[in-house]
Image 1 (tube, one colour):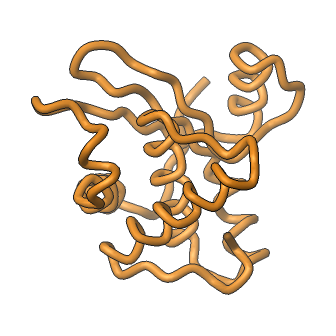
Image 2: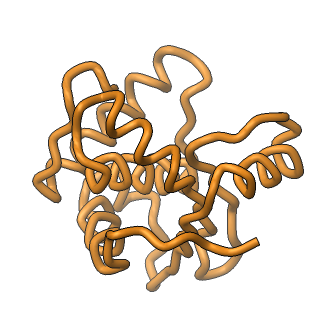
Length: 143
């Protein structure tokens, strides 16, 4: 499987995550020393394979997070086709949707989840706060 190319420079995602790390609740969960996160933009077929292999889910998804070890927080896989579809569906650009998915995956790596309403509200609040720091506003109804 190969990563896909997207018209978004890697420095964009890096800057979004660095600004996200400044949200106090996020900063509190980060290791004291420097840490890394790897992000892979891929296609729906690879996302379906990853989802089936690691989450026992039969379909593709938009973003998956895989915990790391030591100073590597983990890996985030994002489907670029899903990013484009969701951006069109919600009426904002693909860069904003990509930022949302990267932050979402980052929060999962730090232990947040959204299985129940209370968790979902908190994760959405943190996502909006993180995106604000990069001057990204999502279309109404996206979160």
